[in-house]
Image 1 (cartoon, rainbow, N blue to C red):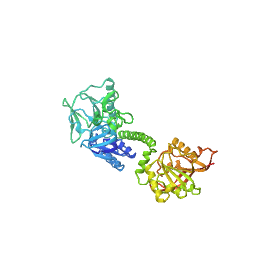
Image 2 (cartoon, rainbow, N blue to C red):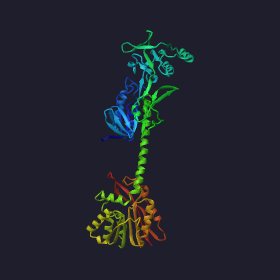
Image 3 (tube, rainbow, N blue to C red):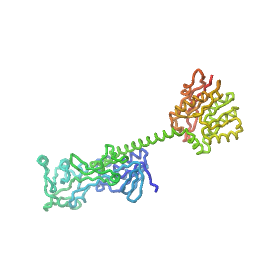
Image 4 (cartoon, rainbow, N blue to C red):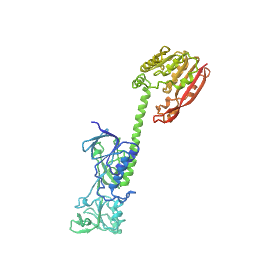
Length: 522
């Protein structure tokens, strides 16, 4: 079954997931966000410390983010990812599958609260855990801090910054040590030792906690430190296990370990947000995921560069083989325009016809033109398909008797020395060593008084929009070729970059340059 494929599948569509997706989409990556629609902060009516969205519902941020991401081409699917397999094949809860080159997991965490009757129902409203997230809204209220976390004593002092009416609720646990007790007393924070039975609510508002003794302690809000548990099922399907998360030497829950950029122990799998950083707020999770998204993009770039280098080396090694040229010609009815190369026309028009060697004659346009000018032409090419077409064109032009077509590789079988009045090599591009060896053989094939004409694409063309194949070391200047000739044996008539007009693939008129060497053997 054909699967949809993406550069990156983001699992989890909260602030972290959308932030990572934004960076990737703006880098022109194909991105799918899969989200179950069950955000951790769903019970909260408002979020804070998010510039531009302070006091607004979390859903507003998500809706705005999704709208922005759709404009960049990000796709969304509702559902849960149940597993992922190396490769990565991602299976959703509806049984569908998608492929991804990379995974960004931002599934967040689950808050495990103390088992106190009525507590969970008030979570995200008047039961809070983060002074920075919700403290301002609870300022000056009677706040009961339930000692349920190793960080309870620390957070109690933070709540005291926001209200003078704070209670330290041990809920039947161990009391503070002497130093802690002194600090609580100094800040006017009473300690309530008894176990809590339930949360008291009146008119949809917490009014107190009922202790197991039956007594009621009046409070307007409760602060509690939950145990944070990473949502790790999809990661565990890839062999990535959650580990204890410690803060100040105390275990606060579980998380997925990752490096500073979000990379996990499995290459290609990345995490961001609360699934790896239990203490990350909305803004912190979004910022971390922005960095992780950038690192994923860089990871993909590195992979694509490796693949491009391998393909480049393979093509360089094979593109000049007989098989490659045969395939190229077989793939199209005509590869070239059928017109003679303009620099050949310019340089040979006034030469006295004699015997000419047309190197890499292709479909025969240059050979036919030379024959019409009165030359006796040896047309040589590595492709039998091209030579067959060239022979047909020569016959149609009525000059077949003036052209000899030869299937040869001049790199392996050099032309006879001193045999030609004109040797023409038009756009014969090869790797540097092969090119130097071939051009040396071509120069030797020129008879005294004869002309060597070598034309190629100038390296400056690569900076234009002409769409030239990008093989920089196969391009050359005329001066480079001229420098290899024996000055005592050759007169260099021209060694220059000649401009000519061309049309690029988008229809724009541009100027390109031919590297033109014209040399006469003394």
